[in-house]
Image 1 (cartoon, rainbow, N blue to C red):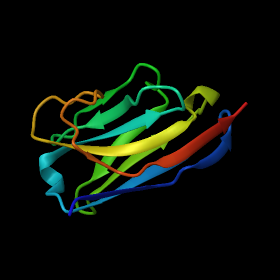
Image 2: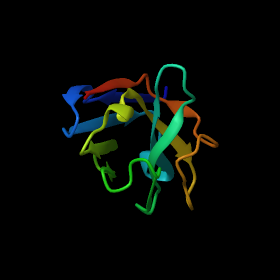
Image 3: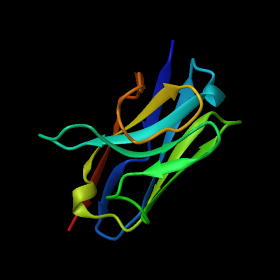
Image 4: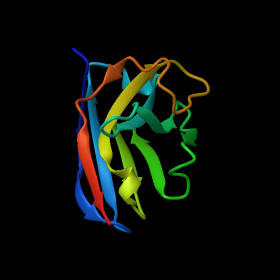
Amino acid sequence: QVQLVESGGGSVQAGGSLRLSCETSGIHYNYYCMGWFRQAPGNEREGVATINTYVSTNYADSVKGRFTISRDNAKKTLYLQMNSLKPEDTAMYYCAARPGAGACYPVRAGFGDWGQGTQVTVSS
């Protein structure tokens, strides 16, 4: 049974930081590209950042320079360090997994396993 469990969300004022974690089970973690996505009420779920099997990263333009995605393969855990948070970052953040090697971008295609999400709220 595939399980992706996010944690680390919360409420923070603009300019603050949060670190999200995604613990995985039921997948061979090292064979997957991992990604973070987010969805605000009334919006489509959008890609935030991805990290592939070769630890190559890609970011949405909206978070470049502020967010950092990383992975700990020994712990089978994905992280998202979020700095300089803005109110527009407010959303439910989801961890997702896409099998395979190669280029991996923060788009939904190919991501078939999803966590339940963790809420991030940024106040002005």
